[in-house]
Length: 77
Image (cartoon, rainbow, N blue to C red; front, side):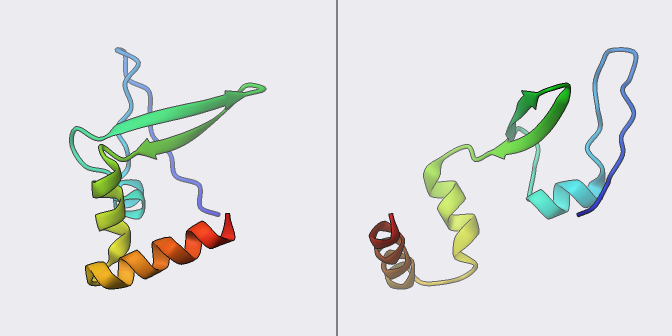
């Protein structure tokens, strides 16, 4: 687990550290969610679309390979 810090500005804004943006593959215009429970928050990046999220996960694989992985995942559910 890594701990990364950011400072809240006078306008209550945060800048995401470069290392965090790279780790989570976050870019300009991306949406995020915050899961809050017992005064703790978990930051969750949201893909702009399912297709984009799958494309990022594919890591250069061809469509046939991705299709096989999706089928295998469905069987696990």
